[in-house]
Length: 162
Image (cartoon, rainbow, N blue to C red; front, side, top):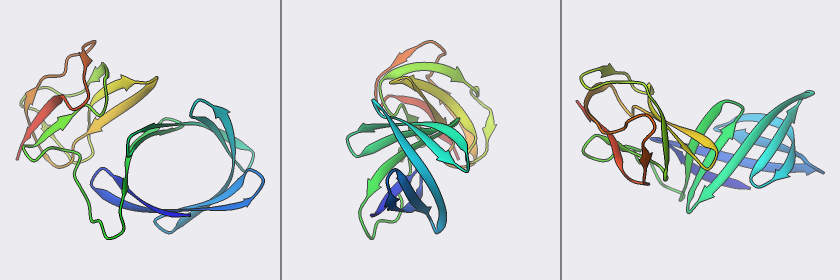
């Protein structure tokens, strides 16, 4: 089954081919991986490849999928064929909380210069940590995230200058 997903500002093509039983070939942007998938319930999985096991979790919220594989976090949104990309940041340069949760880490401060992809803030939601990363190079203009604060989905946490 071929699907398209927005991963931050990037469009990803994902193809999942069943190989029988619990084995699958997963191809992301042309890179293929064969693995065994064990569903543990409640969105939790164990991915087995060459005798090595990696835990995973997928949480669906509308068209978004919050995915954790080992220590890697992804926020994916189903795209339609022909889509280009859509930035995670608002047009004003602000980054918003992806869902209601608790701010667990603030890794920048106002006035700090940041690089594209740099982790800025971590929000724990639904037993997963979601790391907000800078969509571009810039400078932190405002920071409304505070460690230990509860935030709602869509609440601006950081605003970047050009």
